[in-house]
Image (cartoon, rainbow, N blue to C red; front, side, top):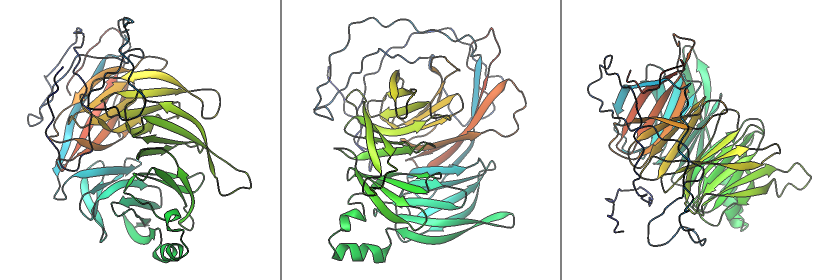
Length: 436
């Protein structure tokens, strides 16, 4: 089959294109009576479902890893089971802001009250929620903020210069005051380690791709395109371990509350690491298992609220997920979610919602009822560039007790930030998608 090349997008990683699949047409109900935001062009696709046994088909000159791609399975795919408890999903875009900073590369939020956005400029913008009004900025000499994390008292920002900058957060009247604390690695420590020949232990040798913070263990984790993950002590900001994690660039990391570390890479694997609490401090983390992602580079990771499901977004547009077992780090493959036509660049999980952003400029939403299958319920359209980052947080003041909802904040390489309000009601006897 002849493949048409996608237009080249500046500063976007190589993204595999997946063959567009025909989706079964199912009966649905659409209501446009209450829709007043005519500036947003929102369209719907028929519901699709998780399919544990659907084959993956990759296209390109060569696979991303040495493992050959298996031929498509001839086993027929059973028809999807429709969840009768899922009644309606309503959503609309409530805010849209065009920034002057260029591409939006990362977003972090705290308790649904404040959000931070990083871009290819040297400015981190601070937004008050739910009003979505800018209330401050964090500036540095370095440009291109590639990853953000926020805790109750600190903000961590990774830059393209392979360093992490840290600010403290202090309440000041009705607002919050930010004070620059340090740069990781510290300049003095890096110079001393360079002289002693240990500079590779102190600084990443390639740009940082992801950071995460373990509050329970007081640790900071940073992943890099140099194939390593570094562990920093939050108290003194010193590097205490360098993990030779993968054979290809590490794209994403996530740390569970129990201290288990998950890393995703272009080598098409997700690796699970546990903490070692022995006397040997030179090796704080040990590999438990390497999970295969069907020969497709894994670009992003997220855990659901109780860390019972791990989701991995891949370059072929599929989302693979693994279910937690009885033992620490034990995971069983659960299936994959299909719908995107380009690489998955960001993922978020909130309550029963799983939200994905893609290089195809769309955001898709799945709902997973308790002990049920994932149901694809909505596609959010409006961005004109790849959706590089997103976060989800609770809606304040839900009117009906039978409704679940969240607010999704998306950032794109078109320089636009958008807020979406999403609701899901669960009355019996009706199945459909409704536009709020």
